[in-house]
Image 1 (tube, rainbow, N blue to C red):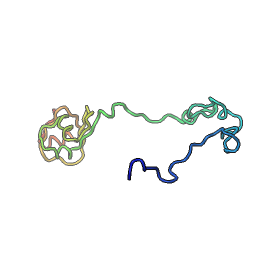
Image 2 (image 1 turned 30 degrees about the vertical axis):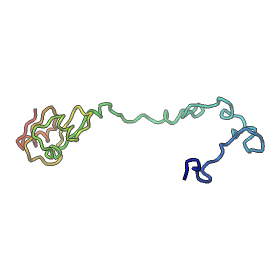
Image 3 (image 1 turned 60 degrees about the horizontal axis):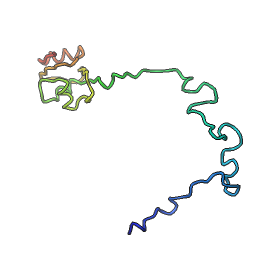
Image 4 (image 1 turned 120 degrees about the vertical axis):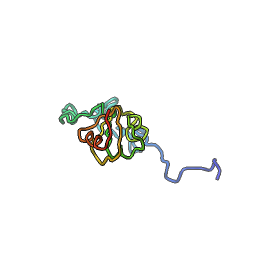
Length: 143
């Protein structure tokens, strides 16, 4: 095989449709645009979602929900995740290095999910009421 012999598979390439090139082409005269109307004219286009003056669907439907911009900066950690960490002193940096929270996380909340048997000391983290009780019951502290 040489580079000068390479060619596409049979039927893979076909000529571009040439519109407005006479009656014999099947796309002459109106060039597939039909007769009259906005879409037949040159420059005749309208914006996406335009419904001819009728109130567009996206404006007829009610607005719903809310997407907080603070979401990427918040994270949650389970008690069972804390138990799996090899260190005793846990802060935001330790959680990021362990891959338990996203790099963008600024506020981390510890939730009561799973078991915590070992002693852990939390620094700069928030804990729910149940999680705080579980941490203190295991002999840990929350600073």
